[in-house]
Image 1: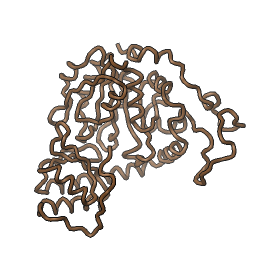
Image 2: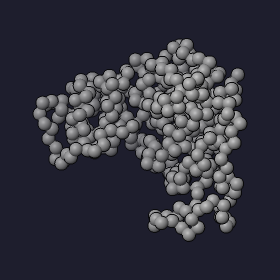
Image 3: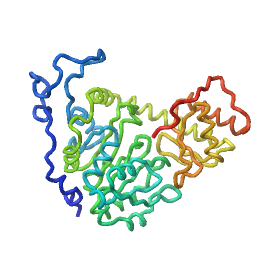
Image 4: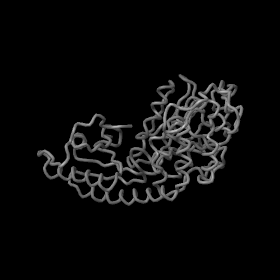
Length: 372
């Protein structure tokens, strides 16, 4: 039987959280002399930002809950998904004692957070078709395994993980939190694991506003879990972790669900066209199936292709040194014009690999060649 109190670090249970001024008074009308703010206004003409934002983002959560089919108390909002990733590690894992389990190739921040918090890392690779090796995972779990990370759709492979594998891990790992990272779920034809929150008290689901909602610059992530765990995350988070402009823009975005769905449909249609055209290129070996907004593509010489794309200011992600992704580049689905530019450059490479690529653009050397 799952018991959250046995998973949390002992001092977290008795921790007294910081109480901000906006915890003590949650109203919006009054004479505010409690938070040492600038009472006159802001130095920017872009808006008035002299007052601290809602520390618990209640307006967003109340609007988000019916959209996601969850209760308000099951929602935590973070500075990107990276914040709840780090908070989950800090809440559960005793440095130098506990461990967490990942299944590479997968999102790199799980490993980074483990290293930052001095937490041991167990690695059970996915199978060659990027699925969970369930028996190996179950065999690797120890009494000190506090977190098990599953990325579905997976990054960098793009595919959904088999639901039965996730279900078996949830049922077997009675002394671990099982986190399903669904950053790309809006591009997949499957229900979210948020529908199973009440069935599995050890389930945590991560989503984001960065991908389908088109709000990557805002850095706003969603974490869904039991009310008990959400209360713990709220206790250990920074007081005002989500800025007022981010909250305002997220509220506006949540009224534009139809626009979001339209953009998703366009990206999915463009993904299919891009995959078909990539498969026709002679220097492309494999275009892996994708349930996300990107494609993992294996080339004859990925390193050379990557470098030549960079020279033409076409920026993709080199994953060729990652286990099971040898020779692969991860390519985000762009606009129609961006996809055509990519295909044009790749086509010229495949036809005349020794010849310089012709371009009508002035190709200056980019300062930033890749990003996380």
